[in-house]
Amino acid sequence: MWGDWGEIPRSGLSYAALHNAVFAFLAKRFATFLATLFAASVLTFVALEVLPGDPARVILGVDAPDSAVAALRQRLGLDGPPLERYLDWIGHLARGEFGVSYTYSVPVIELVRDRLQVTVPLALLSMALAAALALGLGLYAAAHHNRRGDVVVMGLSQLGISIPSFWLSLLLILAFAVSLNWFSSGGFPGWRNGFGPALAALVLPAVALATVQAAILARFIRSAVLDTMREDYVRTARAKGLSANATLWRHVLRNALIPVVTILGLQFANLLAGTIVVENVFALPGIGRLVLQAINNRDVVVVRDVVVLIAAAVIVINFVVDLLYAAIDPRLRARDV
Image 1 (cartoon, rainbow, N blue to C red):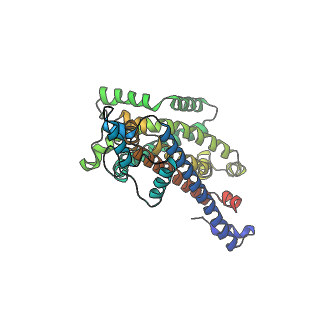
Image 2 (image 1 turned 120 degrees about the vertical axis):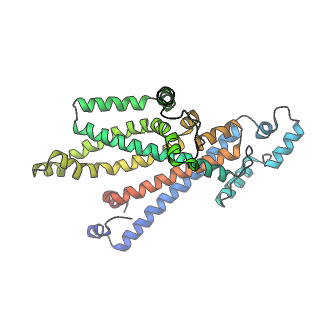
Image 3 (image 1 turned 90 degrees about the vertical axis):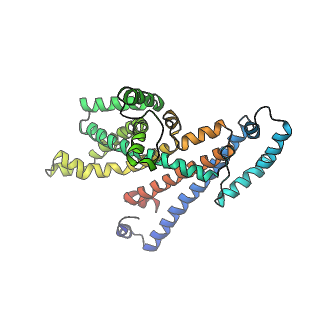
């Protein structure tokens, strides 16, 4: 996992010291993971507590008698002190026990499992499109620094950052679903009905999500490549007669993409957590749509469990990114040890 283990002892560290440093690195990241997850759970619980509306009243209706509402609140465990309910909720989560949805009368974990079949492929497709587009545009802009191509790419990236995803989603629907009839305007047929139709239903929302991410990533790649091109080893390679393209692909790109790994990880985490608007525009039965429906129905069990699961996923992705960054960049390992 840590690449070339032989590099560290030559700098004066023993293998025992290296293993201790690796353990300290993992322990530090894991402690950060637990602290962040605890803070996310507290904020989620408090936010749902202060929101107006009574879940029991929403379930029974506004005309339900107060006695029936009180009985339902007691059955749902909503009548206890907030601290007691928070500790009970966290205790069940720690044991892997999720609640049952007020609205669907189905365990939350089953709802999440079904919705992830849409959200995860959508996020992966969006990330693949964003990475491919950003890599091409970022390299082209860096290779044509301060020339017309660079200006055009930076202008397009600024435009991509400025366009709201929901507005771009509507434009894509008008252009490719209504006018050209190439794709459906919304809905998801399910993977059981064929890989092609299911993937086609995710293309337009993936493009809507990938546009902003690609614009951000392209600017970052351009800056990273330009910074790397100023390094001494790049000038040495050019002085030895290596062509500009060969230098770019053999030396510049590999080193410039090291910090890009962090950005890719953060963007993928944001895609998992930020699909609410796009999923609702395209009527996709994903995690984002589930959360919005649960908020509208005051289904606090679904909201708090899903929000904590998303927070945990984001934290885990960032943790993995830290490990990958330490594995591919020996300078980070040397700093941590």
